Amino acid sequence: MPTILEPGEIEAAASSPPFLYMPPHNLFSLRAQRLATLAEGHALADYLRLIAGLCQVQQQVLDDPPSSEPLDRQRIELCQQHGLPPFAADSLAREDDWQLYLDALLQRYDAPSPSAVADAVQTLRLASAGQRRAWAVALVSGQYSLVPAALVPFLGAALQTAWSHWLLSTPNLALTPGDSLSQCPACGSPAMAGVIRHRGKHNGLRYLVCSLCACEWHVVRVKCVYCEQSKGLDYLSLEDDRHAANQAPLRAEVCPGCNSYLKLLYLENDADAEALSADLSSLMLDMRLAQDGYQRLAPNLLLAPGDE
Image (tube, rainbow, N blue to C red; front, side, top):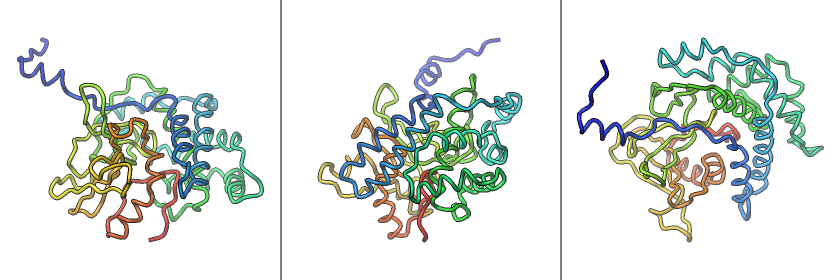
């Protein structure tokens, strides 16, 4: 028999926010454009432009992906039935399908030569499949110290492209919340940042952005995504003559309970903001929070963190 909902239940169901948003098909192009804009007059302009160029190549590979066997549909369906991430990074990184995306990216990327960038690209080109696999497993598990820093952006870019392509090309996904608020329901990777939406009937809701596949999932606001407490949360931003502190487009939600923080983008204050580019262009905020004793748990796969 069909389930009969009472009037109040009907209203609640109709107003429930979507749990998941897929990344746009022009994700990497949008990131490249935003990075190029943010690079103007920025202290890290050269780095931001480097990553913008890398994002452009990511988009080329996403638009014209390498020929490969599709992922095992039976495994994907089995994961969904058991509430597991169907594109689990810790598992798929140990397989070699993603390496086709790395080869495609390295083939299309035009590195200036001679340069440290060219050396990094050549190192990845010449590395064995086993070595690449070891680096990839370390990167998706957050063990940055096991990956040469110069390789991180290129390896991370290839992984992002592969996972975003798998996510966008797999129909009829039924994803459920992960084991923790900060865990991506699609691939199990940690969130890179959060966005506060500003349009439609779900205006003001928070969605976390995956550091790997870029899908977004809903998590209630004013709650630490790591320890799940709400008491004493603070919101910090860098001083900016253009914005009052409570109107800054990017703020860090700081938790005194676990001494961690997560960056949040408020789209009502900057409708063009994008998580990865905003994160890379606000590294000064990370430095300030590190000096204050707070730890960053959100990875950015295109940036090797500095030494403690």
